[in-house]
Amino acid sequence: MRIPILKLKRYLLISVQVDLDDQTALQFQEDLLNKIHQEGSAGVVIDLTSVDMIDSFIAKVLGDVVEMSNLMGAKVVLTGIQPGVAITLIDMGIMLEEVPTALDLEQGLDKLQQELEA
Amino acid sequence: MRIPILKLKRYLLISVQVDLDDQTALQFQEDLLNKIHQEGSAGVVIDLTSVDMIDSFIAKVLGDVVEMSNLMGAKVVLTGIQPGVAITLIDMGIMLEEVPTALDLEQGLDKLQQELEA
Image 1: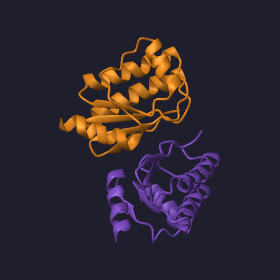
Image 2: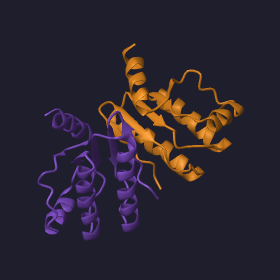
Image 3: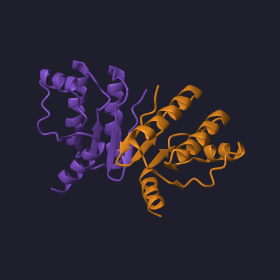
Image 4: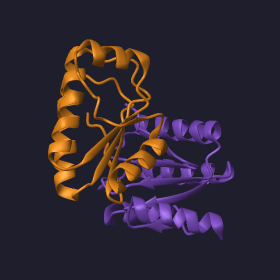
């Protein structure tokens, strides 16, 4: 199955509301990069509110997605990171220091707008 | 599987990007009504851009979702209705005359804002 990617003006919105297995995560990575390219998106908000836990593979894929999107010129904001997810990301050494985060989707969008105007 | 429902301020955004089977459609109906209740949403945009075709059962469920949401006090805008979907809806006698429609998600959101301010 695929994770839906919503286009809203210059941004892409993704709310991950399924358990991310390896296949879904890789498909998402590919879909998102294609969509950024296709739409010429300036920014992406990935909302992880519904994700309780991730394993090391998914953590790596997420870290990669952020870096790849940045390389392509799209700013990524992660929102709704839960404790378990934060722990796995840091344990895995996935540094998201440069990545803006926010509490939820709307704050993520606001943040994106600030970052892009800065 | 469930169709993700994104909350953005007073609105809910849904982009249907899977084939709607009966079970998924009914689950979506239930999830959406629960979410409207839970978030006290003023409006809903359902984007059908990725849906090529629907059968009579799905058409009925969609029509019902719109009426139920309206009953609960949330305005629904449908966006991205493709020819095949439009044909099925009308053939089925599902009258969406009162339902605002728009080309895509962002125009749908604009329309929702106009409707709610009117």
